[in-house]
Image (cartoon, rainbow, N blue to C red; front, side):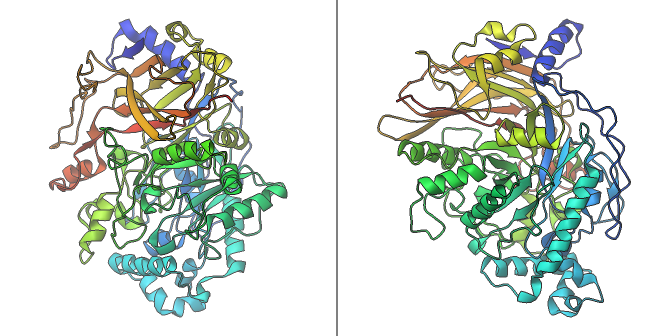
Length: 639
């Protein structure tokens, strides 16, 4: 059984719509953020946070909260060099719906739908140092590098950044660019800003940072999130000390032994050229083993599946039978040198999940047991998840002509890299309350989902006896928790029958209707060979799968390239189903996750092209299908 509701005004579907919305949200209300202090300048101390009035009661069936834990401001070296002068205080003001000053071209920028949680994650590398290059009293301002960093020409600044990143990736770092005392001071100010903006029950902030290992332009970056600010290190760990992820995990384990609670979230495996999920240690020689796998799994429960630098769910080369595998592929290594990666394996999440099953089958445990979130990776305080409100990654991209057509004198390859940036994703969590503890705990147990930027809500439960009757009435969520497990979990012991899955999805009110709900399955056969398949399990309209290929016909496309407009005359506001795996073998290890697709809507570049009165660049799609991914549910045979 699948349940579909078309998004059109009709009293005939209003009651059913209300019912499914209440089941999906579990009582979720996107609480209006409490009033926050005005954005501060770089020299302004973050204001003290008032007590949150009337904190909403915790919801045992959990609410959907949306946020972003991968945010940079002008306090990161690359953001500052590319023009951002925004501060962490600005970032938290923006996330709560306030206008902040646009570093790139003046004026104001503002999110249309405020977020529930946000975290500034400045680069640990060169922390605070590049900002000193604009301080005339600092010796750093007299360096040759400072001339490029402070240039009024954004192309000069971009090439200066490209050079710094190039040297950093090659292990060439001027000792003058590292200042532990300054980094410690800046870290303390970052924490202070997070604490000042935290309003339990209304708006949540976290203390964290980005560990930016980039060996030979291969992205091994991680964002590190602390549950609270009670026990924090005096200084964060920089990848300039070591680019080996095991160094980071050992550092995290040491902090955990001292009372800290923290986790790391890797991102952009697509830019790692096969290194993010490799099955050898950092030296490229020793195979990973049980100790390595346990340490990685202990420290990294989540993976950032989508952000500005593309989506790394899978790739058409790895998943040739998945017609939606090519979504927003930013196909470059991590540099401004527009170099293409050569290796797909080890770069994408779905293949990593399969490799995790293989590792587990050897008795070494699963190092890649990842839940999913999305983030933006903005470098200008303001996230870029709203496709219709896109302001780019770096400050110079705030000018639509710069991000779409490039700047005079900018290499064509760099122009294309920027054109192919996505609008950025969002992290979704199912948590009892909008607090640090509740949201962090949801991330730790992987009850999370990622979206490509829209606020699609999706529930996913696995069990052994769900039926169509569970979709009727308001008890679907209670049934999911009572008789099954939520996304991010392991199925309990099998009962001699195939697992059944309860799936419910609802659209973002400000985005397109839903096209379909899919379940992606990966498994190992008796010989240990890896397999994957994608099932369409619920869809809008009266479409029927092709009897020969099994493929569901496209939903259609209402996007008008000339106006960058679309209509919700196709698709559904909500989709729900109970699905039982028709190919289940109790002897085979498997994982399942949900992918929800919207109908086609205009890409940010199409919207920009219409506003500028220029054609959409031929290398870019006119429309995209925004989407969401749940964390997987795993099945392990007994015995």
